[in-house]
Image (cartoon, rainbow, N blue to C red; front, side, top):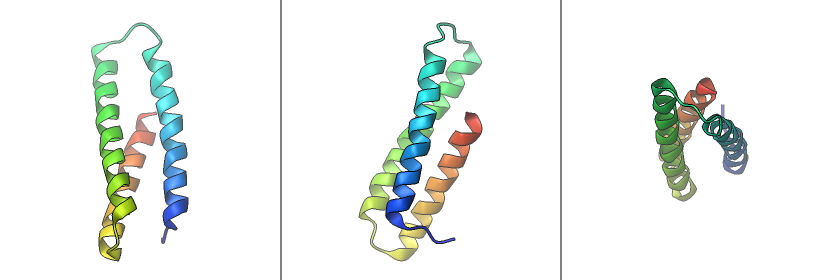
Length: 84
């Protein structure tokens, strides 16, 4: 499946915003278990990786490299969506 770069970025931003809102809601509950903190740390790691890949994707000109980055971005987004 081919992705238009702008559409992909827009879609990923929407996913990120929803996930960030969910993470914020969990953080404001007041109580957190070890498991919740681990999930939060994992989510933050994925968020940082996602940001880094999006930065690389915005500057990538080689089609093969773009494809690899898009797949990596999709994988991260899938993992973040599974954690929601």
